[in-house]
Length: 393
Image (tube, rainbow, N blue to C red; front, top):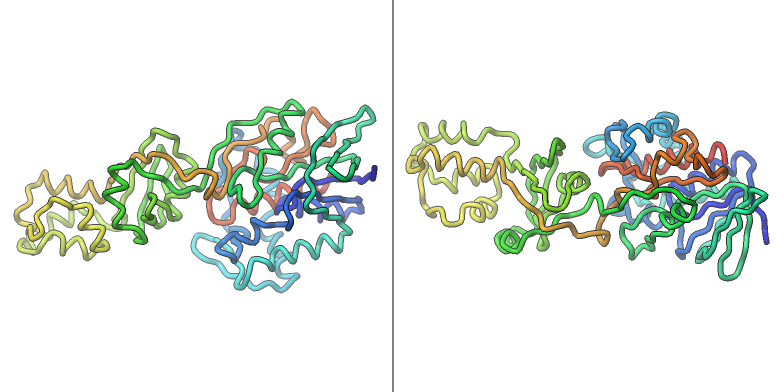
């Protein structure tokens, strides 16, 4: 049995960051992962360009049963800290909308950077390694067994991620580990995920597949202003993915397809100015023609504005500006970008991510009940939580 100071289960963003920081402190570190390659989600993120952080990180961008938990790590390892590493390796990047930072080239530059830092910190990485058993011994050490090897360590870090995208190797290992050691795990569900539609809505909207519209999407007291995308299965796009993390099955969402105009006021104005203008022609100045035709099916093809009663104008305005939709569900973990829920934050130190009642056991990254918005927030939580644990393991 080989002994290490630190063993990290999971060679994703959080695990690699933690291993780098622990290695810098002279700790002997082993990273284990059941996949054949490290950092698979890093490689696929951001359409292959890795949306590695966001310049506008605030705690309110995160969902958790303990809304204060993420503050400590995020305040001590900020986006600028990760950017120092990016600049050290001369990785070109750019800012997209809303503070999102992407690589100019390929996301493998981020992974290559992390692996280079691991090498410089003498981190050992063992892939294709499935941990079958973990025990904490009376001497305080953790013993780990895989098919062909056994190890022991003083500090054990669980960085196994969530359940999203099972084809990339996602598994419930981290949650089972938490439960094995008596920690509460909040129920998990898919987040940042497209909606599927009720049969009638799916049939009605199927013709719009591939069309995107800038919108405001609301649910409960939360709203997001970005585009939505009609798909052959339902609705996607940034605003839909964002609101999906707040939506619960059975609830409705409200979508304003014309967020920049007051459609009712424009109706009344145009009815006076251009009473003979065709309704569909006028609305097609604001929205794709196919969207207008789909939403106004049954409305006379050549109906003009002066023919509309005040009540009918209100109904049409609400169709576009306050479209109430009840999704049938989501596409689930298959396409979800993150997993909501996870290891109860109250069982961990917000400063170190160590279990309060089990010295030497740490949980970091997505396996913890901290879920960020779309746009680099989840990577920043991975870097920050990994860095925080890496200072003390």
